[in-house]
Image (cartoon, rainbow, N blue to C red; front, side):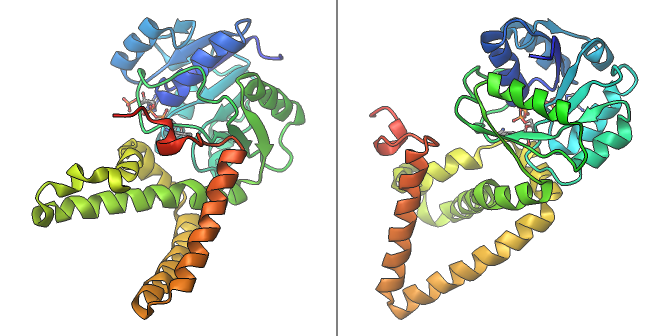
Length: 301
Ligand code: NAP
């Protein structure tokens, strides 16, 4: 492993999980951490999210060969500015943001001395903050690296090795392609969950508590996704606007077609689609991306 010291900026779910996974899986790497919020720094020190929790961003990155920015997408610029003066020349700077177009340019402009390799671990939960992280978060999950053309090959190789060491499977992708893929697999599903939970809550007046009472009928699974961090998701939709709008257009057309099938009593169209989607669920389980047990392996209650 080429990195002797890794600095983590932002100590919430993802930053904290990186710190814990490093401690457990790659204990020879020294870790430093910093978060803008003093209360988060205090809690991070208690949980040991990094070997040393620093009081300033500069202190955290001094002497680091690799710095990972684990802040909301809209805060990447501020986080990069905070480390700019103390960042050692040649350090690998990466991030974990959920949308990737433009991040390499933003970081290169603020950190000309760095070797930039953006990344996105496709792993997470609906929880956030310094208590949310756990060491196994990245185990068997994909981490997508989106280096710009001409990026330093050694930096890409070393960051790939780091993520593999944390238990992830690494894929390299062009940033714009990443954003279109994730718009379909993550951003639109979250948008649908936010919408349906919002609509149901507006209907509560009519249904008088029955939405919550009978939530196991499917609604409950949407509420988990819709409980995700508001800051993070606001920033994802604002930063991945083009791809989300493109995919939302497709989704709306498909929804209209289903609406027509229901109105026309066209059962074949409905059945064919549901059969196809059931196969996709099977593939997700076969590829180890979810728990195949009934009810997602939730305990009986
Ligand atoms: P999180 O739990 O809210 O952690 C982010 C932390 O960064 C918070 O402690 C926040 O403090 C801090 N912060 C905000 N602005 C900062 C700044 N300028 N400098 C230093 N610290 C700052 O969020 P997360 O879920 O770990 O998400 C972090 C990044 O990972 C986001 O870019 C997100 O898109 C990406 N990501 C998330 C998931 C997921 O499922 N959650 C999955 C993959 C990637 P305050 O709370 O005080 O603002």
